[in-house]
Image 1 (cartoon, rainbow, N blue to C red):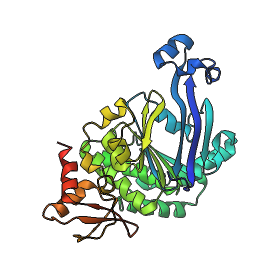
Image 2: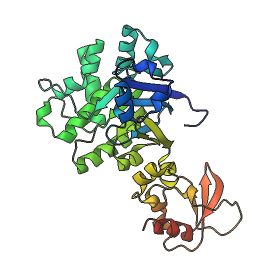
Image 3: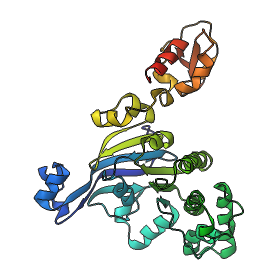
Image 4: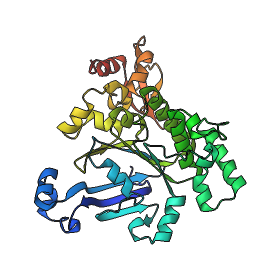
Length: 342
């Protein structure tokens, strides 16, 4: 997140430790023990350790890690499904740990929504009623909430399915209902806890594309939990790699792939085709010199997407950012990046 961007979600030094006298462990050398040793010594398990991050308005922030890394525990502290053992969680200016029950309930109803791996649809209710459930809890009048529910069903590609029941829909369609239900209350912040991991690969890819399309259209702040690196790279503006309750690296997909922070991240990204992630900015020559150019290309262009342009072109391209030349890229640089993947 840029320094001048306004944080919609801000976490500072967040811990979650399960076990006796958990709060007394924080700030002591014991807190840094490996999980197995901490459990043996204290009877406690540290799920999240001293995590801090900011998420800007409209950003997709992905937290990824293997099972047991602490990622799902972390996201569930953002709306206080779990309370942190220590630390601060601020949502759009509200420190949620200082909210009373009424105000916390209001924040959950109006500012934040969550999409789970398991759809949690009410089987005896129509799809439109499932989508409108949050609005019903708010006390919204029936005609108004059904109109809103049908509107968001159209948004997720399920227009016309409002009068059906969950068991009449496929798994992918049910997950779209889950998305629609989360969107219906018009939250500022959307939390996704491995929502697509139970879907088969083709449906999962379609749902990832749906999230990308929704983000382009509605510009919500999204925090997405996954154990799948390809999913993280596809969806995230920034990615946090989590291990043993800590963030190992936070960066853009390009930064994580091109400059892994340690061997753990490098092992994760080893098989990622770099040319599918790296941008032209990372391979260009930084020069503003005059010359004969084949055309302009945006600095944010993915290297793979430039291959067809340079294949038959011997002249270099100007690299531009906000209309200004920032460098030059040629066929040699693009092909060299492609060869690195082989």
